[in-house]
Length: 528
Image 1: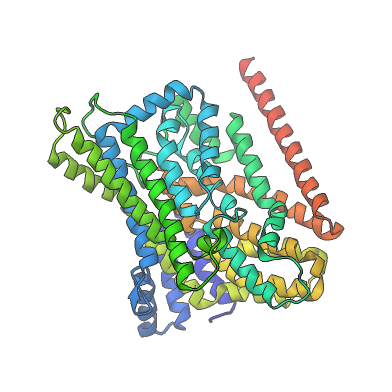
Image 2: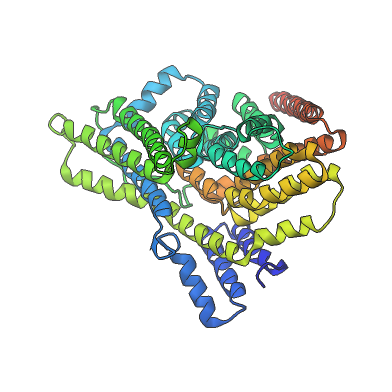
């Protein structure tokens, strides 16, 4: 059953169940059990062994602690503690009041969130959680739904990282290209120059960012997002109160007048600054240890992102707690037991996100064991499709693979070498467009998958119910993917990148014009 069509059943079961029931853990659990049974050919003992191995992979892998995932989980928990300490000290309230006087419009709050997502581009995990911490008080004040905040965060994390050479994604991908190009004598450009040249060919990223800016600038919303925004604007209901909200504190702390803007800004600055310094330091140290030439690319390729995140999280937590302690005498509501309650409340607020990640990683591990990605890529490889169709086929395949496995990096690892080999043999001039299509498709799949860790962390950073985020974001992602598909078809048949890009731009202009005209017509009808 490994490497056959049956290998796609577990992710399909998980995704269909999560869309139908909106119960993420139950749905992921069903997918995990199905994958464990299939991988063991329904042998009870081996199935239990597979199940146990998958559930502990987040903590223990190949005879050692899985520090990568453990550090990610610790960072998430620390963010919950920072949020609680900042709320306890009055920093969130003070920052929201400060921002309200400077960012006076809903449009300004939305655009700020989008720009923050673009500026903080070094890593998608870091982006998803840090942007939410900074933007949430501002968007809450302007009655922007948490679902829309999660959409803005998710649409500016992976899409920016995948085209930025100075990011954990960029460094990884440049390393992948170096391995491929090293065995191909006919290729004249360097991995770095190829990566930069591929950026304008990533039609999904271009479309996604254009659509994000459009919906940040206007008050137009589509489908389920429209309902969430209406509730936020008219009733002040920013999220669904009857659903689990990761990152949302369930305890109200005493209101006081001693909060300052620095009580929120200083811990976030410490978190960001220490994380970046640690990324540079760990990358530099690893490059030295491996005898590599020191450059910005080698540093980001070898950086230890999880360790950097947890170190930055500790720095932010310590500073947030210290700022509260410094005002212990002047703040009549302050107490050490209250600080302990805040600590517990912060940890508890992030537990739902941690549990979802553990289940998602377990399912990803079993899907890898079933070789689902290998099966999907083999189907396309054996199909002998015309060269003109290959860029769009690569985009769709990468999207399906990342959507069903929940990981874009896994899709990169499988599909980039396959796409490169096909194009080098069949049409070398289409090599970079095909590779760009793989990157674009993997981001689309990861962007829209309910079992993707980036999607989970975006909803966590925004304080939004996970399935509300998936349901509201999916239509926007599908629109972007449809436009990207047309662009890749035009590129494939014309053989010209710029004609494909022009097709994408024209479709976007038509889309935005239609949406604006329809919105104006609805406003006129409502006033009459």
